[in-house]
Image (cartoon, rainbow, N blue to C red; front, side, top):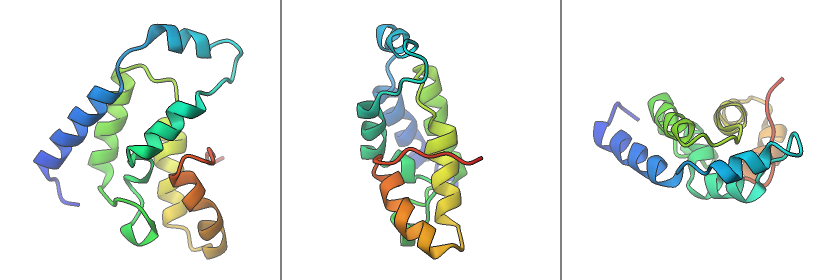
Length: 121
């Protein structure tokens, strides 16, 4: 995707509307440590944001790094504690470009659907 300002504005507005600050939810996730709101993760996947940097041929949106940054920025403003950059941007990006076709075929669809939350090490 080129630097399409209108597309980036639409993404920014959609992410801003989605990521409203929710202090009670954030505090609730702090205890127990390591808790993750799976429903919220599924909702992020439902927006298509986990596939923002994944090539279209692999089921992604292939929107480019600027779009991923816009989404991450707005989710950060909303203080969403989900690991969006590590597990929602970097992992799908790398899986989508992996030469390991078996790994890509087995993991990428589950990651993009929000069913499997993985990160790189």
